[in-house]
Structures are given as C-alpha cells and as structure tokens.
Image 1 (cartoon, each protein chain N blue to C red):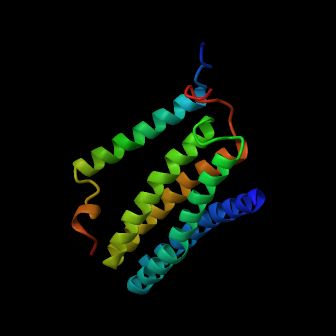
Image 2 (cartoon, rainbow over the protein chains, first blue to last red):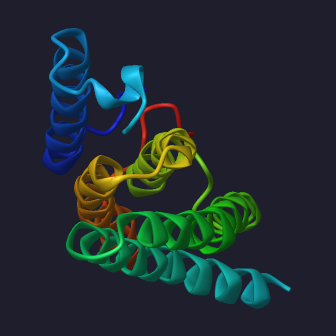
Length: 41
Length: 140
C-alpha cells in the first residue's frame, strides 16, 4: 500500500528544526554561548 | 470532560505565552533598573507561572490527542506540536536553573531567551489554529 506523500510544509519544518539544532550545537561547541557552561554573573 | 480538558489546554497554552511575555518585560526592566530584584521576580514568574502552565499545557495536550480523533502521532501538525513543546519545556527548566546567579548578565541573557521562546511558542499555537493537512506515514 502506497503511503501519502509528505506535505511540503512538513519538509520545511523538518529542515528548520534540523537547522536550529545544528546552529545551537555549533554555538555551544565554539563557545559563542558560554553562559550555560560558566554560570551567569 | 473532553471540553474541560480542551479549555484547560487552550488557557494554559495561551497563558504560557503570556507568562513568557511578562518574563520578557521583567528581563528588560532588569537591564534598566535593579537587576537583582528583576531577576528574583523572573524566578518567581518562571517557577510560579511559566513552568506550571507549560506542564499543564503539555499534559492536557497529550490527553486531548489520545482521547480525540487527531491522535498523538497520526497528523503531522500534532507531531510537530509535541516535537516543539517538549524540548522547549526542557530548555525552559535548564535556563531557569541559571537564574540562580542573578545579575545584569543574567537579565540580558533572559531577554534573548524569552524573546526566542515567544517566537518559537507561536508555532504550536499557530499549528493548533491552522491544523495544516498531512498524515504521518506510520498512521493506518
């Protein structure tokens, strides 16, 4: 049984969420977002 | 009972957004005035309003989807509501923990956090209103 094609908006959502995850990971790894590691003043 | 759950879900979800807006206002006030007082008010708002509302919104949302026709994993818009809400709730708890050390830096950071949260939390609210079409491949 063939399943219904994935709607375009779903692909955009998945792409956007993946982009956010990658961006946050890069910011954390590069130390651009250090507050979570060092604690705040 | 189902309508009461729906009412609770709508009130808590919209209230969550509103409480974050109040949190943002306090964070902005913290950069201009007494940072420590604003930070303490943010902690009260966060733990007293934002977190409980987020918990009620998530719990009633799950019950609503499981007891209604939409299902939890049947429609993409419901799946995305879960996918967005759960990590947001975890990040919320994580970031509120950081409020323990209050200061001007914390207030500035909280402005960014609250503004981002307001922008992100619009998405599940919009999904509930528009209910875009599309069923998941793992539905029958």
